[in-house]
Image (cartoon, rainbow, N blue to C red):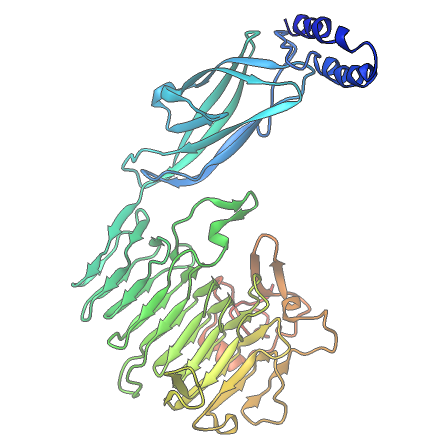
Length: 506
């Protein structure tokens, strides 16, 4: 039909232009005639097939009763002629948990008809899944097939898979009486989780709290998080999908708010807790610091990692932190403003990968800012003590330690570092004892060279010291005997030369 139309156009239009500028018109018309080829020809040969951008469209673990993000499948026709698709259907039909939009057409009831893919062209399928809740404590798998029936009768298919996770949803929950959460399945938190003054919230080993965007855990009472090496307590965001095929959202910062202990809180204990990917890590407000009172916060064998703000902010309170990693924060990794603090076998690593405008690994100060001018607008909070034993304090910068003293001076600061690896300069200062300084004249050598895994592409880190690191054998054995097991369950004393930091090298 197309060829007949083109011939008719030539018969009608060409004769009037046989002279004068007729040759110009003939040249223009030639382009029209050439364009009337077999571009819109279609084949029904069984040998002609579609190809797909993936054989399987796989969704990561999806929270049940929640719509997933959308995955894209590209349907290619690399043949020299067009292909018509008579029917596209989900194998489970209307019972399928998967939803498909193909070339702008939604597959109602899991079925669609009459699609075309021109030669050397493609169309797009947008696929999402919403899995039903099955009241299960374990992950449950789903699979279906997307079936393409060509005009030739050939049937091609793409596999669809997903895993579902049932959760317990808490919306605007306020804990007013002592309560222990269940570790059988994760909790999905909306509108923040608040522990009221006088109440104690206990998180048993294996308990996971998944917080929606901007949502925090706000503690006015007491939090007891009792994880174990095999089953840590986890505080994280609720995104279970991926930013890129290689990068889960869970490996990126700013997925939720953070953990905040207020001034009326007391006696908080965190053991084997994994707190990651928040807007901030842990904030502790100003409280009483007398020796007779229990510390506001005790942490042991925890991780605070990959934070889009400050990591650990301790303001005029009493804390004890042991065997803990605080790392990769946009703001200061650890900030101590006044108070009484002890850090033993900790790794403070400032390697935030997404901005060069990152904070320091450690800030010590005696003032709480109250206005824009820090030299005038502040409340004085004396730094009673800051003790660091067998710690690693490092980062990208040439100097990752900063004093922020306004009432007193850095020279008067009441702090002590013993048997630590530090990326700073403090030689000759008696408050730095048996310290190895992590310094180099080469800009290509940074603190990251001490560790066994440092992957800035996939955001994967292991701050265990490698065999050549200056961290090895640096720790004071007498202090190490008080905490003989590192955060990964390894003995610090097996080789007689314990390492500084939260991890013992192998």
